[in-house]
Image (cartoon, rainbow, N blue to C red; front, side, top):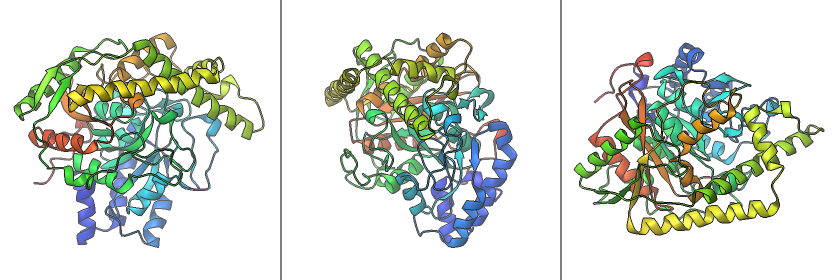
Length: 480
């Protein structure tokens, strides 16, 4: 398929449904591009092409995406019989004997899984660089990060290997790579998508799973196929009124939108990011919405203490459990230097500290919920910086203090919505003079992905981005 990249995921599914192309031909197109491009990108770190061919030969389910290639992230997204490393050498040989519920659902939708994408060690930084697998490069500039922790997924989509890929987000890890790579990235509401059966929640409810895509309709359609609680889920997001795909193209009405240009953690904001979000505000006003610069303020110390306590506690628990399974104590050389800093912090925390942290993020959620009674949505830059050079965010950085400052710039607008559990989406509405994507973020009320998708689709129609492809891998304009 020479024109493979001219279609989004639903477009490819339509070709299969009409009989214009066979699933094996789509897989060949994806594998060919992986072979040609991934030596540059380093996005797909665990290929499972033969397993994909076997699934096609056995007969795919008659799901809505039958025959379309897909990639799973190598972080808590188990695929039976395939290594699940979490980007960490301590798990390098771990092979699960069952699929994660998300894997079950994407298979049932007819998607063809042919690999797993790069994540940094346990997803705790916003670049996809690891001691285990090396550096994932940004298709727009191979010397810059593709973001993290779903950077492998984003690089594979922006690089034309697949039209969409599984991703997860505990502090911005869907939205940040989407911003870095010029994609759509939705973090759903807390409880919207399944985390099981291994865990009931990720990072005390701060982490959710979904995908990065090139079109809003793909984002919506994948959510239709995967949302809803799995057995034993600790909580459930409010049920949607109708299919999420039905929201794409539906009129959003005149919305009241609050504009925020200052980070919640105090990190400085690059002028390119401020320019992008102010331009997006003018676009929204031209579409009939009311945009008002009304900052939402939080207790910065409560926010910082709560999130770091939850992350460090969860990380320590997972690592100590794995070391115990291997019959030994956890060692410093089992993980990267930045990870060990969090392990050391985790060992100083008490159960009461963890309980206070959970109360803290719940308090932030209630505070934002009250703010969003006055406004329909909150508009921000996705990141406080354009994509950073490789190495600036790595867990083995020579200067971990500088690495932390860089990290705070990347999560300064995203992490709050993980704490509050509210849905947020990054849209590729900006590019700077260097030709790098600059994402813009919209956050909605808990459970209200529908409104986000309606407005995202309106923005996509007003300022299309699908034809905008990295020069390194451009394959011409989309049809129609």
